[in-house]
Image (cartoon, rainbow, N blue to C red):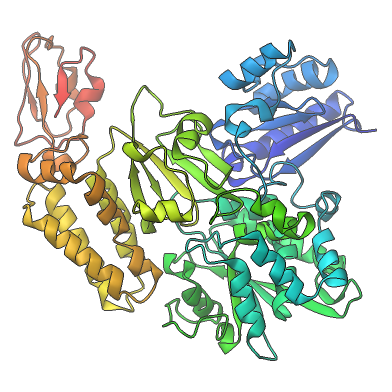
Length: 603
């Protein structure tokens, strides 16, 4: 009889931290102690709190162990699983969970949901991630899996399904935020004897891993939703376009598709209703432009991934010229729950124009990096300071980048902005797929704009001149500024060129590529001016504008800095004040890292 379940994260983050070795060691120890018939090990998807991996949760207690190593396993087995004594040193607690534990007069650590990281989250798309074994269809069914598909096929017409999705207010989670039900409606109205349902799992934004985590932790949710979408628009075939760099996600999706076929949930005559639907997987090579739906469809067809002119839109003429809907993984992950719990349930969350929840990949200068799912309308401050645990090392919050290369930078002055589609666009950013990168006072906003533009230049497919040439010209101006050769007239050139690229580019990649430049100019223009006029980088990031100097009153003449300098730029004898030759200095920072007396300053 199973008396305990040990859940170990098997997502990419924890796998890279060694969670597979944990599972093997745990299985060995349980066998040695004769507990292998009483304790079940469950490999799950991502729990969300990636900064603390590898993560292990023991049920029924709900004890949350973090940063576990194979060396910790014997103690956990001996003390917790054999003797019932929690290993306190490995339990994750924050201020919120400590307070909850104290108020309830419980000696044991508070549960996972009492932590600040989880308390304000509402997991809908991520409901099964970190809860079930993603490679078990039975566990998915035990969590009401495929009940929504059964309900749709047996009790609802295609029009009723579309009406339900429309009434829920669900908008596409892939970037643009187009109403999902309306897209399905267009495809339903298109007359054709062949239609397709496509999933965009080509998550290309730097720092974004929301869709990957759903595929790794709950792949059947995608399969069920795509079958529902196919029924709604009259399709019998689906394609999942997923990047090949996601091997765990691809493997689990393949397993899930095979299981669904075996159970009769994919294929012919599903649930005996005469409805036929099957899925295919197409691996992408990692081209960012293939996140644009028409480029994605072109790639599925076996051609070079380049966007097409619109109209016609894919709902009218898409894959192989047939009506097609394209939604991303997170959008589909909400569908089954909307069908089971109703449109009003979903619409009760969020704001007037942005319903439901949104998953963000929280990264950068933040204490709690990982995946968070919050109701639309949650403020940026709540995400950064409460869920994210604030900016570490006593630094100040400076900005947040949402929407990846297509988004913009939100300054600290707007930290109380409610996060939804319309508010983000209003302040010069966008939702995007859900990357949220936090920056502190040590971040140079000109350098940030340059970083994202370098990415876009590399990823441009080159089909249209505004994007192919315009983004390169933008980057040249930014390089000129960060090299100390900028002129004030360059700021006008940046704005003029950015607006031209936005209005003239063929697809969303080019149309949004200038956003990081436009938003940083809007909110951090003083930093651009400082780079140009003062020839200084206020954040001390841009190397060609930096200088390292040694303060005479602090230098002890220990020679350590001179011995570390790779360029031989530091001159001085033992017990004498040293000097840095600025002409030789390569600004690598090796000297400042090694100086024990704080005598070297960067400015």
